[in-house]
Amino acid sequence: MPIPTRVQDRSSEEHAPLPVLGDDVHVPLRDGGSVPYAALDVAASAPALRQVWDDVAAFAPYYGSVHRGAGHLSQLSSETYERSRATVAAFLGCRPDDALVLTRSTTDSMNLLAAVLPSGTRVFVFESEHHAALLCWRDRPTTVLPAPRSPAEAVASLERALAEAAEGPRLVCVTGASNVTGEVWPVERLAAVARRHGARTVVDAAQLAPHRRVDVAGWGVDWVALSGHKLYAPFGAGVLAGRADWLEEAEPYLAGGGASSAVERTADGRLDVAWRSGAARHEAGSPNVLGAVALASACTALTEAGRERLAAREERLLDRLRTGLEAVPGVSVLSLFGPEADRVAVVSFTVRGLPAAHVAAELAGRYGIGVRDGFFCAHPLVRTLLEEEGPAGCGDGGGAVRASFGAGTPAEHVERLVRAVGELAR
Image (cartoon, rainbow, N blue to C red; front, side, top):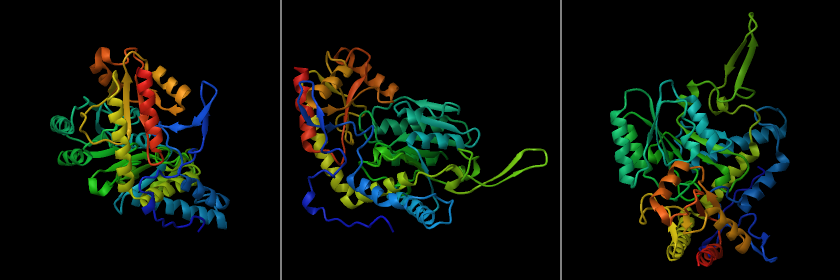
């Protein structure tokens, strides 16, 4: 067993961030000085937890081929890979008969699901989704719903659309938390509506999973998709977890070794292939065992740290960030559901008279703060929110500024951002 089991007492670290790689990195400033880097683009790629790095390093000497070799390291790697799969499934609250396919990312997971949909499946998706959950259905019959202005409106809109739709297989795609506003969506209520109308549900949990519990069985959803690089495990692994039947009935997402159990050349020169069942059917090629180890390690570390404790800490920092930004004249915080909506640690904003790209560049060059600017792979939603601001928005068509943080973010980074935006606005 190359990776140790950890039991940690964090009672004395109630307000401390989790240790992450890069928390001691200094970056140059435009004036020639340097400061500790404030990584506030966690919604795009979260830093690796130090525990994840340590676990990957502990396993690396034992790395071998997965499901291929008879040697000791191959057997150990195969065992570790499958144990990692089980750890992630437990973290997500999967049902005993659910499949968990290890992919490259949320985008890969969504495209996998799109590839296995039964013929004629109609997809229902809100225009406010991330492109990973919006664009993969383009070759399928799709109903795109307008961005709702409240959780209740989202539920009512889906109810109407499903009631008016023709019979046949149907899939509802919804985000767990917006990557633009951080607002949490009513996943359980939307899944209940879908079930009443005989539809299945897939949840893009990429932004939700790093901050809140995911519960496939408890929510009554059919699938969830997420990315390791947003869950403090940036080693190229993603997940599609949920019902196995559509995955089992479809042709493999990728054709190749591992997905096939037998290949024969027929008398007429064709290739006759017998495909594997289970997750292996859609995991052709050499599995990313290091990515699987990292992802399982992150799930274990977050669980041991206490999801409720981490969420409470992030909520305090989020309240400080939103309060601080809203107090700056000329700053507008983007919101779909309103100021009282439940949200995770993602805030997008504009500064009157300053293009978003300029604000982001100044934050980096003058203050050592890393944020994101633009449309955040959610163009329809950002355009809708900016159009509502009118002249108060950034005004140049360049999108907004997004600050996002997580379990490894020190309070000083949030305070620095609030101070910096105030100075730039003045």
